[in-house]
Structure formats: structure tokens, C-alpha cells
Length: 491
Image (tube, rainbow, N blue to C red; front, side):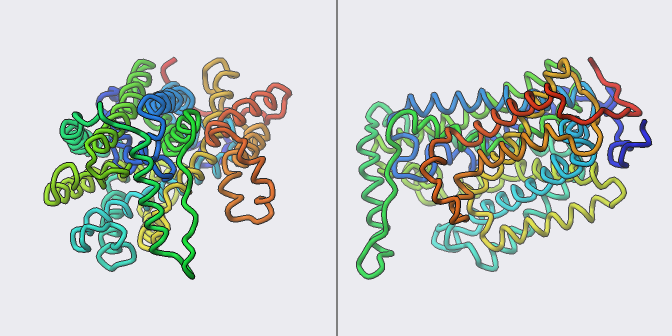
């Protein structure tokens, strides 16, 4: 009965059809704003930071990895949550109670989503503040970290984004409608400037230059005349594809699960599909593809030879003044993704803590974001991608399995902690985060040679979550469903 439901579930009301909006007024441009965020697309050619990035084997392997990642993000991470949101009119933190139980759902995906989104807000504020403060520190973004201006700008940025997130999806969508044009225009300009060099791009030449630059940098920090080791470039086409899959899926995982929050504002299945195809798959391929072409073209022209970061190539392809202006514009264009993170975090806390003023709960979360940005902890984006992919890969996998097993509909909230959901998540998380955990837990380091055999950790975590949930649910390891007072939505 409804009386068995906790307040955050019992008080949830579906979004009425009269308030639903089209995919091109909400889903597409908001997701596109995320994928056009410079922190994302500059990481496509950079990969995991090894010399030569993801272009050591040429353009085609990199494009294969990019397209495959875009496909996986749309189909395996976004689609099931989006359709669940559409058919119930309810947000992720309610539809997730079918997978994790009404008690367990309060923690995951409820609080976990909110907490990780405040982590993303910290990353956004950190990166934007770097670009905005860099001109005052010899155009060196790294030199701004830890300075008072960087801390102040980070704080103002996070607070402004949190306020927009609290205002709701319509306001976030308005911000996201025009801002993505800025990075897109910059990408197009950089492609035009560097295009003639693509035909002369030689991967080995770029990689050799990158290795020498890394060796020179290591020599500067040598201790006792002994330079530290330089990471080896990616060897083989599969290494490139796997690196791109890992980075892109890890970046996107929470945004995929948040598809429920967009689906509940959509009118039909076509809205869900088109919003994802355009805003996720299309924008990922466009932004990432242009970024790859820019790096290849610049290196083909021997401008910034060995550099795989498109933003660092701007002064080489243009001039310092224009490059500085573009830095500012990219920082400004980072605001929609910051608003997106804040919107998802606000939805999380509004749903799981309905009796607490959202300005208070979101305000506390924003303070955490500011602390992460000001301390520099938010700058470790590789670790952030790993944690997010490991956390939400199995969530997306389990929710997809639950959706399919229920006949492509929402099964309804389940009592307590649903064992199938929590066991599948725990195992999936360990699979996805094993490499990162081994860096900080000495006992796990002894198993490093086995951990390295895990292919594409965030994707493996999703597959484990999907398969394990399906098996456990089929053998009956799930709690009973509870009555929901109102779950009306389109079929």
C-alpha cells in the first residue's frame, strides 16, 4: 500500500502531459552543451595523457573508438532511463526504486547521483576559473591553481550555476540553447585553419615529438640527476579504441542515468530517441571528431608539433591574442554543463529530501563543489571519470535489465533494499574501479596484472551490472513491489 512508501516516494507526482516539452526544447541542446564542453572534447585526442594521445595509430582508429563510444552512450546508458522517465513522468530517484528498493533507492541512485553531480560542478568551476584567470598568469592555466583569484572565480561560478539548476529544466535549457554555439564555432574555425595539414599528418612524427617533450619535462624535475619515467604511447589500434571508450563512457555515465529526468519532461518515445541521437550521439561525434581533426591538422602543419590538446594548440594555429579570447569564450560556454550538473543535483535532493528546503541542501552541496575546486582536487579529471564510470555503469546496466525484464515498463517501487540491484552494483563497481583502487590500496596492487586484463572498465562495469541483475532477478533474488498512488504516464 502507499502507506508503506517513504515520504520521498509517496509524495512524488508525475509530470503531466500538458507540461511536457519537445526534445529540441530540452533534451537535445542540454546534452549537446555537455558534449561541446571543452573539458570533454579536448580529452578525445588527449586520451589518458600518454604521448601522442589517441592519434598514435592515425585518425581512423580514433574515429572508430569515438563513434563506438557515442553509440554505447546513447543505447546502453541513456535510453532505458529516458524511456522509464517518459512512461512514468517520474525522475531517476523514483524509477530507480524498482532496481534498488525504496530504502536503498534513497542512497542510490538518489544521494549518489546528487553527490557526484556536485563533484562535476566542482570540476566545471575549477576548469572555467583556470581559463578565466590564465591571462593574469602568463597564459598558464596551471599557474592559477591555489591562487585567490582562482578560488574566488570558482566560488562565484559554482554559486551561479547552482542557482540556475534550482530554477529547473526550462531555465537550464534556455541557457543551453545558445551557449553551445560558442565552442562549436571555435571548433569549426580551428578546423578551417588546420585542415590543409590533415593530409600531411604523420602519427609517428607527432608521437616522437611528444615523447621527446615528455622526456625534456621529466628532466626538469629530475631528482639527483635521475629523471622520472616517461609513459609509453598507446600501442596498437585496440589500445586507442579502448582508451576512447573508457574516457568517453566514464565522462557520460551520470548524464546517461539522468536521462530519466529528461524523459519525464518529454512527450513521446520519439522525443527520447531524437533527443539522444542528436544531443548525445551526434554531438559526441561532432565535437570529438572536429577535435581529432584539429590536432591532426596542426601536427601535419608542424604547428605545436607533439601537442594533443586542442586548446593548447590555439596560440600556435592563430595568435596569442586570439587564443586568449577563445579561452575566455570557452570558459563562458562551460556554464550550461555547470547548470546541468546543478539541475540533476537539485532534482536528487528535492526528491530524496522533500521536506528540506532545496536552497539549503543544494547550498551545502555547492559549498562542497567550491571546496573541491579551490583545493585543486577537482583537477584530477582522470580519476573523476573512473569513479563516475564505475559508479553509474552498473546502475545503467541494472536499470536496463530491470526495464527489459518488466516488459519495457516500470515495475514499480520495491520494498527495502533490492538484493539483485545492490549485489550487481557492488560487483560492477569493483570491476570498474579496480584499477583506480589499486593505485591507493597497496594490497590490491599485487593483483595489478589481473586488473589490467579488464577491458574498458566502465563498459565492463555496465555489462556486469546488466547480466548479474538479470540473473539474480530471474532466480527470485528481489524484494516485493509496493503500490504507488499515482504513476500515470504515456504508454
